[in-house]
Length: 91
Image 1 (cartoon, rainbow, N blue to C red):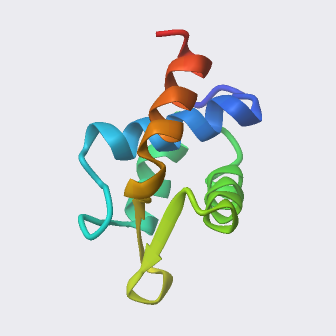
Image 2 (tube, rainbow, N blue to C red):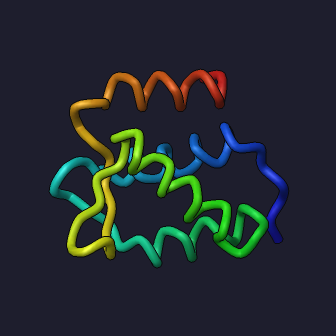
């Protein structure tokens, strides 16, 4: 069962998951699998997750590879990404 996360929390969840699994640059992960895994935690059947990933792509935080089927974190923004995760989760 999912709970309602606010937008910054959804962003931090996506970034944190990719970071913990070492998905930077050319080390990518299937988008559908990520949405499936996180949709068990976040409500709205993955719509909120897909929308957030598209927003990240436009901002340059996420790299979309293999015709949009896989994603990874942008290593040039690693400092900003880790700072954002810490700020939202107050680590």
